[in-house]
Image 1: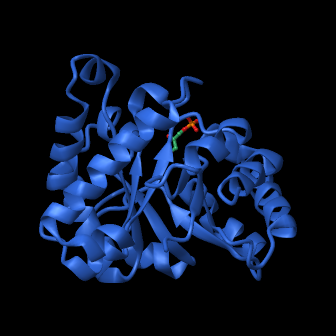
Image 2 (image 1 turned 180 degrees about the horizontal axis):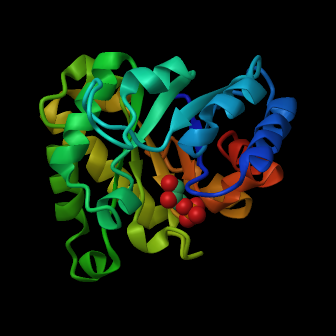
Length: 252
Ligand code: 13P
C-alpha cells in the first residue's frame, strides 16, 4: 500500500524570516505519524535555515532543482551532495517551470535523475502537458514522451523509490484544477507506462502526486482517486493551515 505523500513547492517565494516562520509553524503542528509523508521544498538559499526550523519534526526537506555534475566549474549550480549535506531527502526535477521557462529538456532531467538517485536523494520527477497539447488530444503522448525520456536507464529498484508528479501545466497557479477523473486517467496511464517498462510490482510501488491548484477544499476528492498518491502543492503550501488541510485531505 502506498503511503500518501504531500510536498510543498515554495517556488521563488518568501524571504528568510518568512521561510523559517512557515517551517516552524508546520513543524509545531505536524504530528509524528499522521499517516502521510510531508516535505517542503524552499528556495535553495533557505534550505539550511528551514532544515534547522524543521529539526525534530516529521517534515522532510526537499530542493526544487539541482545539477547533474558532482562538482566543479558550474557557476550558479548545486550538486546532489550539497543538497544532502544541508539535509535534503528529496529533489524536484523537471518541474514544468524548469522545462518551459528555463528550457530544460527531458534529457537534462534524465541526467539529473541519475545523479540524484546515485547520491541517495529521492527525485520527484514532474511531467505534464500544456493546454494546447491537451486540447489537441495529445496528453497521453506527451506524458509518455516525458516519462520515457526523463526516466531512461533507471533501474527497477531505483524506479520503485522514485516519486512522480503529474502536473498539467494549464492547472498550475491558475486556479483551474483538473477534475478528479481527468487527473486519475493520466495517473492510471502513467502507472501503466511504469508497468510496461518495468513490472506490476514496481508500478504498484511508485507514488504519483498530482499538482496544479490543489487546495484544502479539493484535495480530498483528488487524493481519493486510486492512482493519486499525494499532492505537489505550490501556492497553498505557503500557508500552514492550507498545507496541513491538504495533508488531512490525503487521509480522508
Ligand atoms: P499551484 O499549486 O500554485 O498551482 O502550483 C503547483 C505546482 O507547480 C507545484 O509544483
